Image (tube, rainbow, N blue to C red; front, side):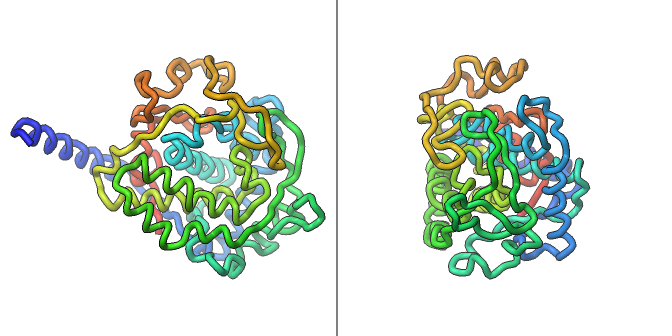
Length: 349
């Protein structure tokens, strides 16, 4: 490497380290994310009650068809399903989506405890050796009467409203457990993903392996790519996936705070919507994204003039916009790369 290039590289690395240090210093209190099993009994009860609070609180979004705050928090995932799955923004979007959920339960429902994740690696072969599926918490599997409705636990008979095309049709929370699916997050698959040294390939590894593990293990609405946030377990699963990504990032800091890539256009799908409806049946699919995202997403700001923010290219960059339907301010992927930075201000334990 020439002397100029070497000096330039060193300056860039130094500036990144300085930015990371500044981010840490401006994050006054890093919030802990821990396995569900590590929460105290009081924290577990308070967390469940906070989600019930969202389920019972009236909607504030003004969205046609939204009745509760639970409907509101599902909408960012539903309306952008085709543009946040199978793309480079998949992991950053879901990192911020978890933060949006945390923001609501803390600011509107009074939750003050630690945020839980489902330790799916520890659950391999012993999925039910936890109180997570007990009646006092999330409840268990769906019924065996062909409807797969969840009829026990604190979310029994939960009514969900959005369906795969973004319209409204009341239906119930469903689950169809497949404990064997957790094998996709075994040590072999984790090591395989951790051995990858670039984000684009690593993201694909997490997406095809550990990501599917929790969704398929719970089943029912959780295997619907668009509607899965209807199940409160969604947030514990995606927090585990985000933990895996953060651990991969920490294998090479600060370099991996700048490492992002992958396509920014969906391979296929609807906007809004995804590959399947709320009961797993196919819904109409159209390639690409809408020519006018404003019409579909309901906004007028510059983030809709340049919805992706990737300078007109088709590769996901740090400038890519992440839209959270006014639950939280829009941010760029670059602002989400460091879990300890002010935007997320969290750490996994």
